[in-house]
Length: 339
Image (cartoon, rainbow, N blue to C red):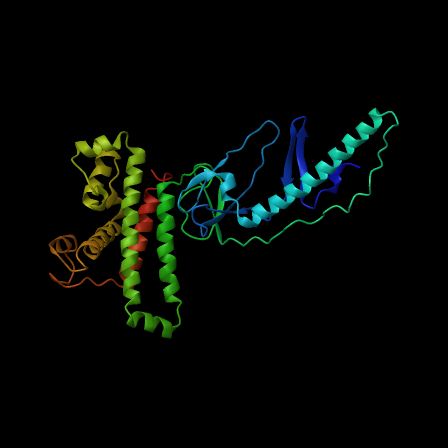
């Protein structure tokens, strides 16, 4: 009997040659994507399409965590459930293969003994038809890498493509802005009682201020990354222009760099949205560096404010929504598909 017919369900021999064989094991998937887990942080779960090398072909053995970017061999990203299923598949195959090889060897010994030895195979136990199986958790959304076109299913903020380790700066920016918009939307959907209690405790203000800081930090990163990707020898350019430190936090300086080296007039292209971004950066500065208290720099950046020196800035829902809209407009403007 062909021993490969005794393998468990979902297990087969992909191919074999004189040196060995490649084992194929069916793995649970959701919409064609199988779950991987970052070896550094178990909460970093994402799903990808598993592809197998054909004869004479090789596939990439490196995977990048979609969230933190950690890079390691593909085997390092297997979930505990996947490892158990593969282990049981390997054990079942090893048993059947060893039993078949032993029977073949004993028959050969009996043949060569010219009748002095006889070999009568014992009845084989019933084959193992089932190995450990599990249901894969359904993923919430998918993203497609613009660089390598691979699709990944994720649960949270994913900034890296598991296959090539890259994502376009505007895609990363849109991801971060989208998270903040989702948070604000969720707050609006809270029952009135819960929302009132959160507001009374200062929770709403804290969330709004965090949104301002996070969006502005993402804005700085976007402007820097797009500049560095599109300007030859960007560090030398910045040094020549005498722009050091967090130059892309200073939107007037960033606008000048884009105008001079990328021939793009961001303030003209964005209009009122650019003003909104400038004011958002000013709010972020005092929240981060001055305990939220209005200073001279803030008054210069936000001349239309009604607040005076020493007062604390107030961040409300409308300001956050306006900043999210302006940030989205900038991300769209800087996407590669735009001139």
